[in-house]
Length: 320
Ligand code: AHZ
Image (tube, rainbow, N blue to C red):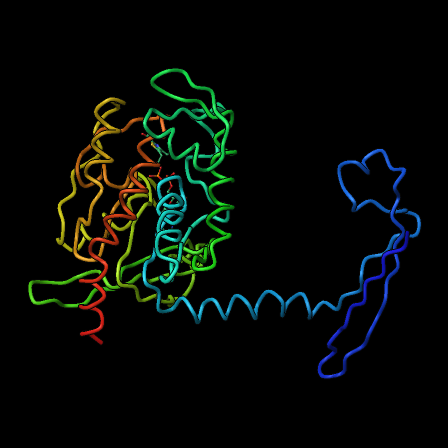
């Protein structure tokens, strides 16, 4: 059977129509798995001009940059807590524009592996409720569940986030400063200062490369515990004397997970902190490779952000 695809190439303003004809191979040994199997000897892709590829990407990216320059909520860090917060917020409030800024090319933070270099991911109950909602299979071990690979969890969560029409992920982009605005009682966080991560990493050996900005009513910071980029927003506010630094405590799974979840909150006007970044201002213990707290902290962060959203939006509308 022949399948015909007609492609129109816009060569500057002159459209050219081209046609490809491919023959499906129903006798293929993989034909039960996919219809996209052809007679490879005669196979040809629909033609394309390189500029079409460039424009397909850049026109959309710059439209998104324009759209999200004024965001409602910015989430910094796309690890397990940040992506959970994004998913819950995006689903709860389809009317809000939510930008995620992730320093790495890949999302997931510490959640592509369970712990050390092991694959499985352990989550203590009651985090199983959210895992079930995501449609993931797991083994029930009583007080905890095990997902067969941490990457399965994070990629499923990420794909659900990316499907939401009101959420945009800007990856390979880092937050390198915060925007603040005066309030009657002090200042509040009013947005983020961003740069390509590769540019940020070279501020010391290149001439000054100024950043970009995103205004937002509420920022949720989920940049993980201290590291080359971790705990970024907490450390930035500490550097300005706006909050106190209390270093992450030693590992105690039982104390750590409850503390991270229950203390997930707006730590400074306009800035909600979730996940392991919180341990760097509350001195909470670390929990190591058990992820229930990251999921539930992300959910609580979404709730806390919406609790203060109207107040921060009002303050934002009253400032420039
Ligand atoms: O790349 C970082 C990662 O994906 C990203 N990030 C950090 N600084 C950033 C910045 N701008 C943009 N300035 C930034 N992105 O934030 C993400 C953090 O993910 P994570 O998995 O490290 O944090 P989490 O709090 O969601 O999960 C932590 C899980 C735990 S617990 C634990 C322990 O107890 O030892 N260790 C880990 C990794």
